[in-house]
Image 1 (tube, rainbow, N blue to C red):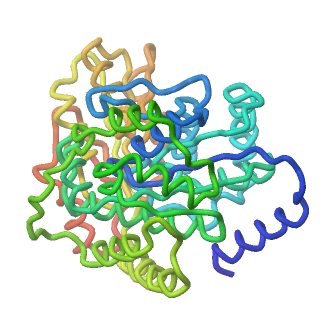
Image 2 (cartoon, helix red, strand yellow; image 1 turned 180 degrees about the vertical axis):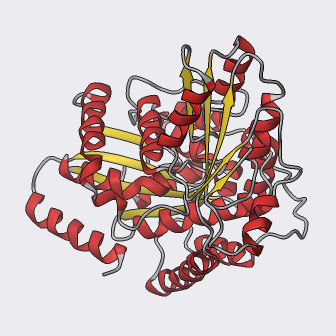
Amino acid sequence: MAWHTIFSNFDLFLHIHLKGRNMRQAVIVLGMHRSGTSAASGMFFLNGYDLGKSIMNANWSNPKGFYENKKIAELSDDLFRRLGVNWHNTLGLRNEWWEENTLDDFRERLKEIILTEFGNDSKLLFKDPRMCILLPFYRKVFAEMEFDLRIVVIFRHPLEVAQSLNRRDGFSFRKSCRIWMDHMIRAERYSRGMKRVFIDYQSVIEDPVQAFIRLAGCLNEPSDLTAEQEARLIDFITPVLNHSDSGKRAETDMRNDAYLLFGIFKSAEYQDLTGTSEHQAEIISETFYQEFREQRYPKISIITIVNQESTDLERTVRSVVTSDYPDLEYIIVACDAGPGHTAICRKYKYLVSLVIFESAISLKEAREKALRMASGEWIWFLESGDSFFDVGPLTDLFNSMAPEKSPIIPD
């Protein structure tokens, strides 16, 4: 049975059995990283929706703020680690992972976060780009808590997203486009059967007031704004939020199916997809994932052990996290590392699968610990100071190798 059919039947069950109850409203903003999710979330926050107590601070990459709950983001990151993936390498996720009993502790943790962060608030707001991938987990828990869910799917031209990720993280266009496809396909698939609306980030930039009014109207939410609220929206959504080279789209090696999917979303702006559009999106989805399955990329775990004698750690880390290999786990074990190494590990923690800080273990013990944590079919120990010469060698290597080779790649 298809994922969207399962969820549609579950939503129908809830609608019948919970009809008449005073359910708490919750808006979930879905969208790829660097696609305007913060802008969309900020618009709802400025108009009375609650993000909880622990709101993530702004930084250089998002000076207006993330408008995201820190506890929810930490839970998503930890859940990715439990599943053996990270936000920019999720193609290797197991089918229907969200049904696994091993995630019960995460379900209880989420319920506790909702209780402590939001209390009895009646209009909740959730924004986390990782929810594109993790929505089935959140959706099931939110249903158990009897939330009346509304979905905003904000999308952005894949080339603009690739440009933004290249500047921030050094990702290649090929890698960024693959991440965009995986996030947006899953966001669309997993949110079927729910009250949802699609919006182009460019529309938010061009007219934030009308964008919010139309979004709220589509979700059956109050959309009347005072002059003060309109002024706040206009001040909040400024051109500085548009982290792209607008108008400078050049022909690149971007995937054609990404442009097709963007066109499907654009045709559904300020509404939901039609049955025909969903079918078209499903064809693109099946072709995209079939390509990955047929290529049969084995999962690779790369391990770097760091101590006080390690040099050029940042070069090593950047060469791994920018690799365009589609199923990669990167583990760093910092054993008795110096302050500079610790700072680098913390700087890139959001791109690394797992960072382990240990102060009193030997290099041999560090290697053994990393091996126990690794989940890849192939394991590569990469010394601090070593690096890949480009983003594509791992992909090219496994495109040309037979699958029977030894699963351990030595130093």
